Length: 240
Image: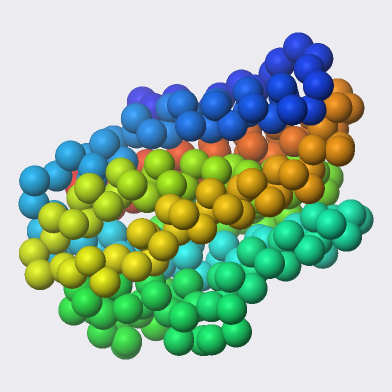
């Protein structure tokens, strides 16, 4: 049984020290050792049927990421943070070009695997993803704004370059897949580093306060632990 909770409590620190510790914890999170990630990253051959299953089950998650970001923007009182979240959402929508939206780039990847548009429209949301969606919607609509921003602006951005790097180890082993088909994943490696830096700078003025630190770590904890449960569901659906 995989333990799906991680504690984040720290002694009082200034904002910069606090943030650095949280970022290190994210990059060393047990999530990266989960069977779902370790299995994909170590594949010598990612069989097309299993790759299709992954792509279809992960797609509903891709579609909803920008909704959580929009929710967080809506409850955030600080205009500087709103501005950064708006920039991130604008990136998600392809800087105004629908053919370059992140959801469309992911659909390009799905089409490269031989998945039809009809199959794409039939969303298959596994229970673990349904739980993640419910958790993130509640967190970003009705929780403390700092918890929401931490979840969508840090926990959902800072670990992604490492996470997508591991996924790419396996996705590049799908027969017939081309590098351009993986643009959604490769493009996020640099983009999410930039997103993370911007949101961190905007949040720093709030992170010297211990109560704010508690809200921030709560957002990280909720996001990462819910994500692990989702990933466990993916592993069972794809590899068992």
